[in-house]
Amino acid sequence: MHRVFGGGASIVNWRRGRNTVHATAVAELREREDSAPRLHGAVPRLNMLRLRIQDDPASGQAELLTYVKLVVVATAPAHFEIHCLEPNCDGYHNLTDSIMAGLVSGRQHFSGESHCRGLVVGADCGRVLVFHAEAEYEDAH
Image 1 (cartoon, rainbow, N blue to C red):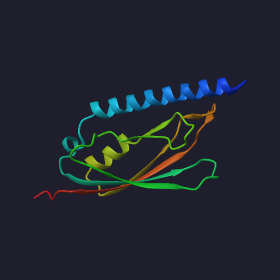
Image 2 (cartoon, rainbow, N blue to C red; image 1 turned 135 degrees about the vertical axis):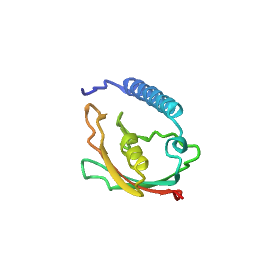
Image 3 (tube, rainbow, N blue to C red; image 1 turned 90 degrees about the vertical axis):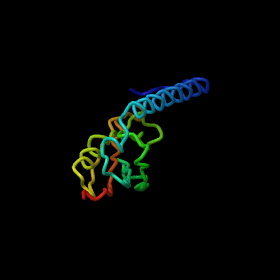
């Protein structure tokens, strides 16, 4: 679906609508995080979790974006969802199942990826988010 704007007022209203949609999406994400079990309760032996996240634009025109998230294990939710890094996209990446599977199995290093299913101006976004996790656990003595 393509949007056609006839004038400045339409663009302003469209932007306000996008801000409302974004605010709603952020509120829904917070609700999912708040209702999720805590990470420490789900994986009691986990001491540290570091996620290195790379966002690869599908077009290949932009550079690969990388950032690192150090998860506060004691208070973090056992829910890993990241909004697509394309500013005009309405999609997100839910990494929860992949990350929790690696943590529950006690793996120290694991990776995964997610393809965005969101839309950018009516077309598929196609961005790929790749994560690399590093976890440290208590000794099982």
